[in-house]
Image 1 (cartoon, protein in one colour):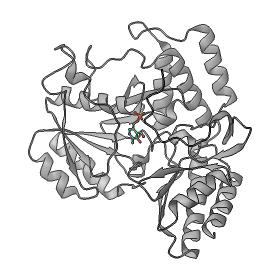
Image 2: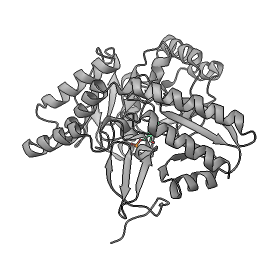
Image 3: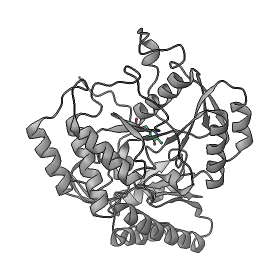
Length: 380
Ligand SMILES: Cc1ncc(COP(=O)(O)O)c(C=O)c1O
């Protein structure tokens, strides 16, 4: 059998990594400013993470969600404390798409409504319709399968209001910062208005922090730059530092009932051990602060480079270590040369935006190396 190859692959195979460095099978070293797509939060192969996972694998890797699992409680408690959502509860799953699916499903279960409002340019995952093909009235209500979605422009509250006024909307879902669209942060004033509006209409507000969460932007969640408290927050990527895990943080106003949500693998022992280790390291190494400091340093310097290179860079956007460099020209050349000449991994969005999503443990020296190489490649 061959793999069902749905990705355009770079001709590089990483086989080893440590911190912000990755080595390919020929021994070539790379600086990782991509973090495996915003997944590596505490750095590759962190000793505490390796220890926790190794010890858990020796004890118990998996048992089902039908028995007690105190690791889930420990994870929920630590996540609540670090994120400021101590009064919320945590549903665990395996990925970002699943976290969003569960949040939307829960919103429909509770509200008895089917329609969802999302924003132009949004990305919330790639799954489609498993619950709609499930024939079990305990799991599928007439409302929670096959959501109808209406897309509205970002930062325009009147468009959202017009939809909510129709009375059939279960939830509004929005990214903390739009990632795949090219790093667009919603205006904090708009977020505040959105929060008040959803509350006024009794519609659930779901914050997708799958990419922008877990300290990446210099706050635990990006929406914490606005003074709001959503009804549900979804998370994944950085949560397991590469071990698949996702979660939905759920407001205390939403009460759990048996059968509402469920999963085979979600919250398993290994995934919880990985996620607890991640939170331990985020706290002990002050990685949210580091993301803010090194991220701000990168953004300020990139803006300086933009001013010094007219006609090359259309915009620098982002917060902390979620940065978009929108190129006016030479996007592919610059990105290819960064990879093949300077050995620096970067991410991309659309056809002209370089995305930086490094581990939160990146140092100022790593940032300087990137800036030096970027200036050099721009000058060619
Ligand atoms: C904002 C956002 N939501 C959801 C997802 C989907 O996550 P996953 O690929 O883990 O299903 C992504 C993935 O890139 C994302 O960026």
